[in-house]
Length: 141
Image (cartoon, rainbow, N blue to C red; front, top):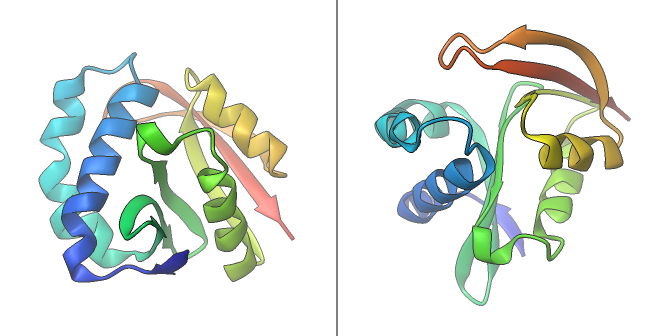
């Protein structure tokens, strides 16, 4: 079930975000992701519209929208490949007429996931925090 984020979800969200970020971005040191946990907790999540996917009473995925940007979408590694990400992305697409996102160029699995869900490539840039190239993608309903 997809529902609005509640303050008591934060520890689950941070755990999912950190474990999934490290798994998906093995080309970036895990210490980078760990160093961003406080910012996620105190800045990014509070500033965003966040929804969670709950299964069996446990949060196993979430996404965050900031205006028309899909700022985050993460599924717990143990729940990946079961359609949770697709359900979350479809929900986000239903809330906006258009969405934009950035994804690391080296994260080929996520790029294919977004393409499968109708996102197209707009351009490429360098992430100022990591120095890694990232793609800018967009979806329009």
